[in-house]
Length: 563
Image (cartoon, rainbow, N blue to C red; front, side, top):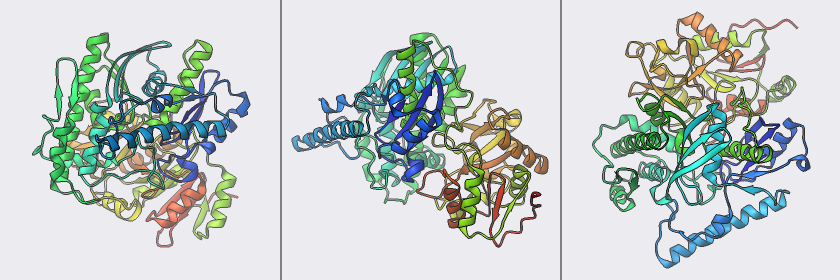
């Protein structure tokens, strides 16, 4: 078993070398990016594996918590909250480090995991990415806010071996750089119900900054903030603080915010290319695995995948800390067996399944009056989307990771230019400038997006072909890109059939896809979660298993299934 217990807490379990289950605690306690110990996630993983706690051969953690207790570099922290270099400030950080170690130790003892194996944080990210990739060998690049003592690390992986090559200290953190700019844009907030995500790993809405970056023009640059030598980059925090004069009010990004977002995104992509070239220089390989929270940056990922540097780029669907639990479980398996884990055919749908009886019970308790069971839910959903309705789609096993990939999704018509505003304002209750992603039939993706690259986990931004942009304005961002999910019948046959039906009706082989939740909540897990989203938001229709719910003002022409 692998556990992540700092923020985005999660559990994963590997049985006989096969990843059986992985799930985030937030889906159970409904506290987005939660820092609570993942007891519910652990229990669910054990239930799915059919084993008891005492049957688990080994438990791996995604951090070496002893490093926090022994920290000798206390000023290398998140530079937004903890960059006080006075003696008093340094002592505050030392105490926070010791507190992190103490809390982790107490939680592990209390829950029966006192003998858990503490792994190096970046190693767990590397293990998750490489052993899910299916590549026989690869360069591995890990980038995040921070591990114990590093923020960027380069690895060479082959078979059962993951060899460390180089690291960058926390002072050069790309994650912290991006978070700092997010703060200047007025978009930063700490995560968790009490805004507590562990003082070493706050979640700051960096994805919003990535979306905002498309609106900049290049008026600012960070060329003096991030500099390069022949073999290394460096982040100059003192120069970064010169941009403090442009700090926006909380929740109110302005013109300067758009320029700052543009500048940090452009610089991140430059560092990506620099590090990829460095890895190729060290190993001679052109196959890359990216992991860590920074690897959720679709724009930078897409730019590298489209570049001449890379023959192959793989990013695991849960590249952030929740996914590191998979790496910790894999590392335990390799230590135990001496063999590499099996590459799972399904790396996405690893969570709880929708149960037909549970759907019926939740619908009966909901008070929703317009309900019907149908024989072909995919066709009903596709027809509703084609008519302009916003449809909640809740099927099968829940996705692992931050993206909704066709089992806990909100779907809409990508042809309608008014659809983004409608969903942002009426359904998601979020900023109007945030883009939406397409789920496209993999076999037809090349006719709509370029370059022709598989993107099964919605982790690559690709260019919408210029001749197609007017046809699908709802998924085309202001810079002409889209965060694409390519869908195959093997990965998700029901969702693929829904998109096929929408293509048959409209001639467009994709639907707009966003996560089934409202602002501030995690993605839906249960039928009750989905119904609550349906009732509280502007969703027109909700399809769960074979049951359809629709609002009173929605004229939905459906034929109920035979009893």
